[in-house]
Image 1: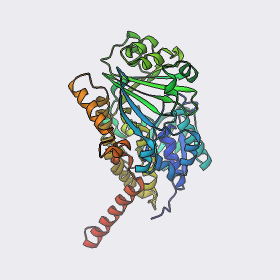
Image 2: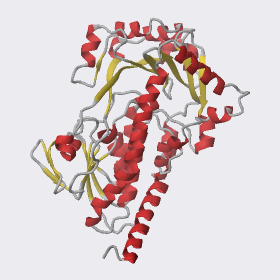
Image 3: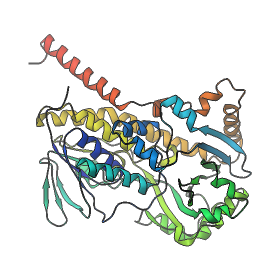
Image 4: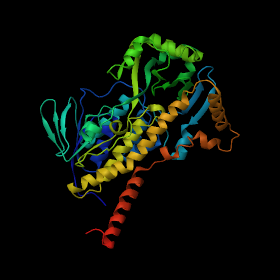
Length: 446
C-alpha cells in the first residue's frame, strides 16, 4: 500500500537519530521540521560504528555511496590482551561484507551527523538550531519553545537523547532515570606523534580498529580516515582506580567534560607498552570524560493520544560495548518511515506508531541486554573465566577451525547485522491486515 497521506512531523533533536529519521520520513513525502536545542551541530564524541544493518538503511536512502566516499572503510578489528598485546581475535570487514552485504564503517560522530544533515537539507527537511523545547502538548501534537513560539504538527517524534523531555511527557509518572554503567575517556592523539615513535607507528598503518580487553577496562582505538589523528576510547568501571577529580567529573551533571591526564595514564599503567606510550601522547585539552549509562525497559514508546513517539537514545539508550546504539537509532527511523507510509488518513497515525513500537521495541531491548553482557565479557578480571574466554576466542580464530571463515565474518551476530527493516515492516503490516480482514469475514468486526 502506498501512502496517500502527507503529514507535518516535528522531530525534537537533531543528532544522528533525529536527522536519519528526518531523511526517511521526508523521502516518504512528509513535511519534516527538526528542532535542535544546541546552537551548532555536534563536534564532540568519538567514532560511531555503522554496521551492516545501519548501512542497509543508508543504502535505501541513497546515501551509502556518499558515506563510502567520505570515509575509509577499516580492514577489520583486532583485539589484544591488555598485558602483553597478544592477539585474541581478528574480524575482517571484507568477510563481513560478503556475509551481510555491507562492511563496517567508523566515522566520527561529527562527520556522521554532518553527512546526515547535508542529506536532510538537500531533501527539503527544515532544521532549526537554537530551538529548545519548553513544553509539549501530546494531545494536539504541539510544542512551545523557550522563546514562547508555538509549533504545531500532526506527529511529534522525540529524538532528544537519554534525558529526553519528550519521553517524560509520554511516560509522566512512569518516566525512568538513566542507569550509570561505566565511564569513558575519549581522546584524539596526533597522528604525527604516533608515527614518530617506533612503538606506536605501526598502529597508524593498515586501517584497522584496535581493541584491548583488560580487568575492569577495555579500549577501542584506531586512526581516522585521513590518518591525522589516532582516536582512543578507554572505558573503565567505577571500581577502577580513579583520582578524586575524575570521580567528581563522572558524577557531575555534565555528560562530557575534560578529564585528568594523570588518571588516564594510571588506568593503563599495567597495559602493554604500546598503550602506555600512546596514552602518554594525549594532550590535556584532548582528554575528555564521557559518562556511559543506559535506560531500563520503558512502559511505552508512544503517547496516549498516539500522536507522539520516541526513538533512539530517548527510547532505548544503551551502553556502547556492541557498537550498536547509533545503528539501532537509524533502524528506528527507517521502520517509523515505512510504517507511516501505510497511512491513508490522519486517524491511521496512532495504530501505525504502535506498529512501529511493536516492531522496534523488542529488538532494541534485546540489543540493550546483549550490549550489557558484552561489556562484562570484555572486562573480566584475570582468572579462570578470563582464561576460558581467551581460549575460546583463540579456537575461533584458528584457521584449522572448520568455522573459521564464519567467525572471521562476525559469526553469531546474524540476528543483529542481517536485519532487514523493510521486510520486518512488510511482515507486520501484511500480517495485521490479513488478521483484520479475517476477523471482518468472520463477523467479529463491523
